Image (cartoon, rainbow, N blue to C red; front, side):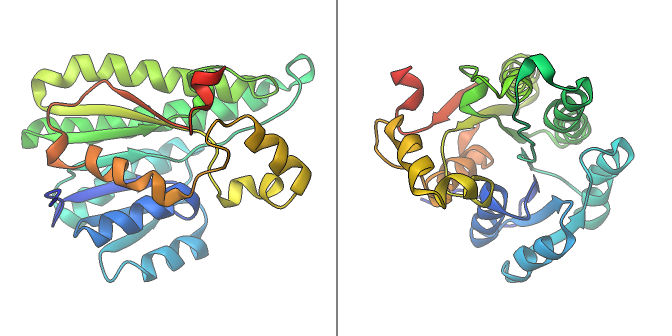
Length: 249
C-alpha cells in the first residue's frame, strides 16, 4: 500500500541510532524528506549517508531549550513545511528512588517531556496553518505500567501518554493527528547491557510472552503509517508494541 509519504517532510528526533535511526531510514525509503535530529553528530551523519539524499542531519541537544526551539524553524527554512513529527529522543535514568538526585528528575522531564512539548507546539502551529499534520510521540511500556528502579523514566513517559491523548482531542478539529507508540523490549544499542549478557537476556525475555525481544524493523511500519496521510482518522491512540508483556502484568 502506498502510504502517500513521497515528498512529505518529517522531523525525527533521537535519529542517530536505534528506533530513531530505523524510523528515519524507513521514512526516507518511502520517499519522505526526513530531518534527522540528535546530539551525536558523527552517528547522525552516518544515518544521513544511508538516506539516498532524503535525510538531512541537524545536530540538536534536547537538554538545551534554545537548541530545541531552533529545530522546527530549521525544518521550515530548508523545506518550507512540516508534515510529520516523531518525538523519539529520550533518556532512561535508572536507580533507587530513595537516593536519587532531584537533578536526574529534572533531566528526564526536560528531555522526555518538555522537549517533545516544545516541538509539538512549534510543529503543530505550522501544521494547523497548512491544514493538516501528524505527530507521533514515542513513549514506553513504562509509561503505561510503571516499573521499579525506573521511576523518573516511568513518570515522564506516563506524561507523554497523557499529553498525547489531551493534545489529540484539542487538535482533532484542526486535522492534526497526535498518536503514541509505547515500545517494549527492542534490540537496540540502548539495550546492549541486556543483549550481550546471556543471563540478563534470559531474564528479560522470560517476562515477554512472545519469548523474544523485537527488532526495530517491527516498529517502523506502524510509525510510518501514523505519520502518513493514511492515518487521518486515527488520533489519541496509544499503540503498545511489546510482545504481550504489558498484558501479562
